[in-house]
Length: 128
Image (cartoon, rainbow, N blue to C red; front, top):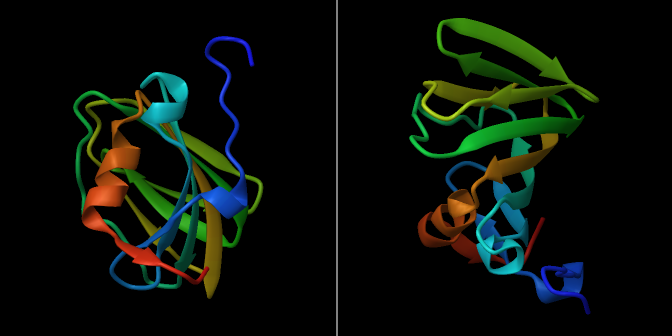
């Protein structure tokens, strides 16, 4: 395989359960990308939410595949539905909340540190 190319297969990955019903699948972590980015598949239940927080060194993007979320970006509250996306630059206070019965969200962070946080703060999960 060429240098820098990494492949991630679903059967080889662990899933990480967080408070509420959120489950993260770390599709690509820093170990795959040389630390340049992380790609996560997030499945969450209605009402699952993050507190307002700041990533000092990471930009974050959310692509909503299914359901709808509210994303707070600074003072703005943004409704993002299926097929919508939002980019949040590093240093911006933000939060998200799932507004539908369930949601599936692709999360991209650059650089990749968020994937390590998901693993450290979560509990291994066998379910989706």
